[in-house]
Length: 358
Ligand SMILES: Nc1nc2c(ncn2[C@@H]2O[C@H](COP(=O)(O)OP(=O)(O)OP(=O)(O)O)[C@@H](O)[C@H]2O)c(=O)[nH]1
Ligand SMILES: [Mg+2]
Image (cartoon, rainbow, N blue to C red; front, side, top):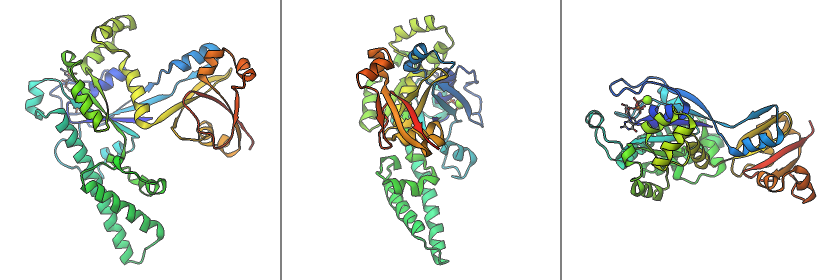
């Protein structure tokens, strides 16, 4: 899963990235923003995989992971050229974590303005919307030029229709992610990788002192449909450099239940509507990521395209049942070991083995 950490300049993106990845990129206040994104791969430490490793004692354990890309501060002045390379890189992300500065710092406020969190969010949403609008309007103009030259296929007409609906929605100042697009409509415009179509979670970066006083803001954002998390970034960065025992002590003081790594992993799965299924055996215990609503063939295809092509059945049992009853043998006796067909919708925590023939 690829998540882009984005936000206005000096909102604390790199501080959060360092806390997530254990890296030590500079976060100097007066330094010009970095020109390239930092990339970090963070394993999703699913406790179920750890438990399955104890049970199966495989040669290899493979956790899922999240690729975080920490971008330089963007949308700082005006709309950039939509074809700018940084933008196209950002557009290749599956989802965004938008960092909002809500810690007091008079120097940063003087340099970058003292905008309240909701103003920062609107500013970001507006910039995304304008950008998407420019891209869709340009494409419509090109399509119209094509019509004049006699290029009028059903595919292009369909694309134009969807783009016009998108433009109307954007002109209403609403992000595309709020639109309900049919699968074929979504497919017609997928190539544009619109900013405002991507799922976006909000990270409110606060000082340690204000960590526990953000409930009103959280509620207001939740009412608007955002998933958000309060983060005392500098504190979390310091925590991530401590050993587990020491970190646990400080976390308890602050009322932080889990490491920032784990909290964000949960939120990213929730944001993207992803779930995990597992494969187990002597060789390997492994977590796989799919989208809620994916069927057994799609899940098989994640493992290998041959498994999807030659799919016969999925042998399937549930992680929770395995833990409850102790062994695959008991599950079989109790009828909790199922053979599922192509249309079976894979659930979070399913343990699957694909029968196939190619
Ligand atoms: N007090 C306080 N300062 C913070 C916090 N997070 C970041 N800062 C400070 O804000 C400044 C910028 O932090 P960065 O993490 O580099 O911010 P950024 O968003 O990556 O900045 P750019 O990439 O340049 O846009 C630094 O001086 C940090 O020390 C925080 O949680 N509390
Ligand atoms: Mg940065």
